Image (tube, rainbow, N blue to C red; front, side):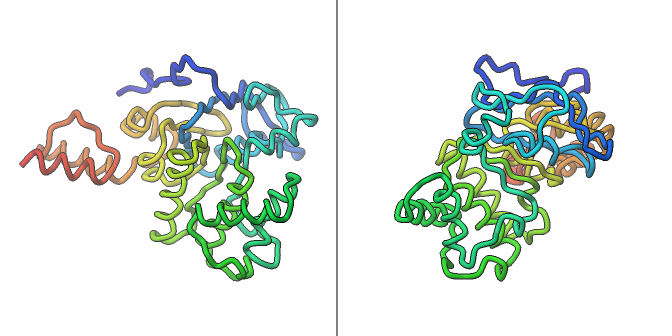
Length: 288
C-alpha cells in the first residue's frame, strides 16, 4: 500500500452523524490546536484518532460537544451545527470522557457520581438511580458506596465512563482510554468500548497512542500530525502503510511488526495483513 492510495473520508454513501468540516482552532495564546481538520463519524462504528503528542487529537475531541468552538470551519452533529444555542441538546447526544478521570469525579460516592448526569437531564431521583445502576452494571462496577477519589486508576476510568453511559448518548468520545492503565484494566476498557458499539449501538470516537488498541477495535483510523488530518482509512490501510507511519512518527502495532518480520524471513507468505494476535497465530498455523 502506498501513501497515495489512502482511502479518504471512507467513500460511504450514508450521511455522517459527526462532520468536522475544515475546522481550525487557535488558542488564546496563539497556539494552533488544529488546522483545517476534516473528519466524519458514521453510526455504529469505532473511529480512532492517532498521532503523537501535540498532534491535535484532544483538540478535535473537545469540538465534538462544544467544549471548544472552531476559530474557522464547521462542526455538525446529527445534522445540526455545534453552536452555543444547540449545546444543551448536543450534550445529550455526545458524551465526552476526559483522559483525566479525576476531572469528572466529584460526588461523595460512586452511585451519587453516576446519578448526577441523569439528574441534570431532568430525570427523577428514582429514574436517575435506575439509570446509574444500569450504567454501572454495563461497565461491570459494583462498589456503589466507595468514594471515587479512593479508587484505582482503572476503576476511576470505568466510573467516569459509567457517568456518561448513564445519560445514554448516541456517541461516546473517549480521550486516551487506556493511558496509564495496567494490562488487566486496559483489557476491561477495550471490551467495554466494543460493548458500547455492538450491544448498545453507540458510535465510539477515541484518541489513543496505543496503535495495537486502534488496530484491534477501530473500524476507521484518522492520523493527525501538527494539527492536521493527514490520512484516513481502515486499520489495514493505515497500519500497513510504513511511509505514512514514518511521516507521522508512529510505530506500527506489534502484530504488524511481527507479521512483516515473518514475511521477510520467509516463514509465511505476504498478503493476509493480520491486525490481531489471533489472526497472526492462525496464519502461522496454516503455514505449517
